[in-house]
Amino acid sequence: MLTKISIEQPSLLFVIYFGYFLISILFSFLLNKVLLKFSSNLGIRTHDVNLRWSPSSKPAFGGIGFFIVFLISGSIYSILFDIGPNVFNLELLGIVTVSSIAFIMGLADDAYNTKPILKCMAQLICGVILIFTGTYIQLFPSQIANYALTIFWVVGIMNSINMLDNMDGIATTVSIFILLAAILTIFLSSKDYTNFHLVVLLGVMGSLVGFLFFNWHPSKMFMGDTGSQFLGVFLAAIGIIYFWNNKGLSGDDAHTRQIIIALLAFIMPIIDTTVVTINRLRKGIPPYVGGKDHTTHHLSYLGHTDDKVGIIFGGISLVSVFLIFIILKIISQWNYWHVLLFFVYFLIVFCIFFRNTLMSSPPNCMEEKQEDNP
Image 1: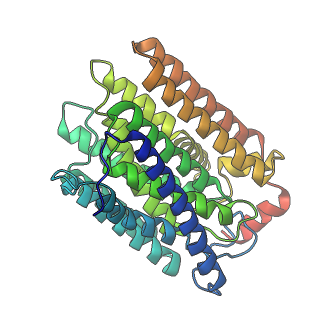
Image 2: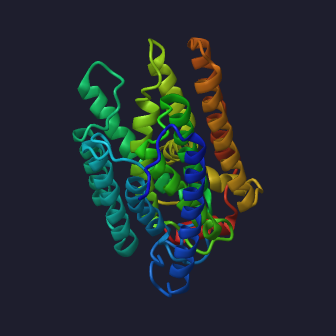
């Protein structure tokens, strides 16, 4: 009879988690290889090829592997650990529900190019469901303010990950580091090594690593809205639980530390979306209209290769994970000087990327292509 693993077996837990992570990578790699082999026209988006950085249409079903591993993780957890009464609760049901809604909505958008208003409505519904199932930001004394911030966060992150999926490997790499930050937070703050979310996070992160073999430049496939919408709502929910509402942080300084951790973990999606939104509003262009004006594109206009752009985004994300480690493990007495220091770091990165968009411009041939194909 299989004996369930307990927290008293840390070395065995590490081996099991590492093994599951590797299996997730392998499963994702094989699944995407099979899908790619039999894709033909399946999942290939032709309606937005002129707005994508890639010069050709490619299959956009990378999110299928993410979602399958996400669902499998529940079964894996029940095999490894004793399922307590608090594991499968309303909060978890909410996360599964919104992840499914986002996945289906993304699938429909990849297939039929749905209108932005429908996508926005689905994102709002995801935010409302998370609130009613207990996953909402607990920052202000007013619940209305908390609910409003939660809706803004969920919709914002879903759109940010979607917008960041504009160049080979970028959204995938950044999402991997966000998941790594969440895993690090669980280990350093809650010390709950049999946490259900930990198994899911390792599985989804493994599926992203397996997909990256096909998504790194030159990519063979995209994650599509199927992947970006699922990742957006999943990362938003995990961000609420382990960054905004980190139970391992207490005291009067807890809220400021939580805000800084959330900003650092999502630094690249937040900066890219904010810069793009500012620049488009300055030009009188709606923020939701696609284009080749992202921070990634402007790095390319400055002469960086697609590989180097991916490394830059991954490098900054890695530095931010390291800073989160410092906040959680090294800084014992948190004060407002720390808030200022880490916020200045965030502003410096923001200003560098914003300045790049003002200094660079697309080649004339690319500008003409955008004007001819809005």
